[in-house]
Image (cartoon, rainbow, N blue to C red; front, top):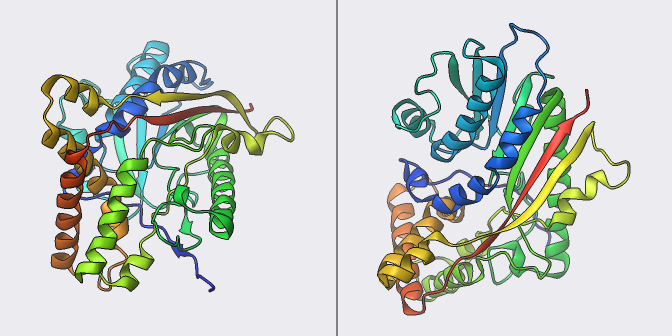
Length: 358
């Protein structure tokens, strides 16, 4: 049956929920900070009065952007002094919770604006699969856990909602979409980067065995969706439409555009590292041995990150009461299943650093 591709729903749960429960993503971004600092040290500034532009592609609600943007600002300050104006553009979809972003940037004790009168945060409500900043205006680009989201969902996934559990023509459709979107993202960023600029991208990854670390968590959620259909709280048609527009790439997928000529759209690869991210919640569990606490942490990570995309498949996604009931029931079911047999969520992360030729 023909499926009409639909725009992906990649907005995180609002009201600051993503800021509160996206500690796993923060851990993955932290692995990339040394590479980010190294990349920032290499960026040339020719004009002494030139404003520095930092672009945060896929900022969500801002909490996980504070550390990387702060590292970049400190590095620029060491090189060029305190007087250079620095503009920070946080880019995300129009539906993003920008109120929470500006609240955390303005009031968090660890905010990059603290003690920095010449740093100016801004926001752009537009998909990064479009041009979001002027040609050759960006010195440093940063994107963490955002490019895993595709521009559109190319196919339904029979029996599941995540691409890693698909095969055949469905998997092939996601593979094509994933390759097209990665090249589109690179092309747009190459256009926006200044010559000599750097782009650092952090992504959840697949290892060589096609594992990404979230197998048990996603399979539990999938079984709960089937239970909800059986119980009549979720329609079979709604369940069929529930597909996450995520695509987990291997290292070779990220490097593929650069294979023919050693560069792509004037971008070259300076580093591409795959790391294992240990589950911090599991480390804590080894000490407190509280199954319910561990289950709650994993369930809330799932809810804050993926629940809005699943809920967008409900017949009336604007029905706030129905969306809330769906999220509440799925969260409660996850806590129940995860507490029965605790397992760690050790995941894989890739950091790729790209430079634009001068």
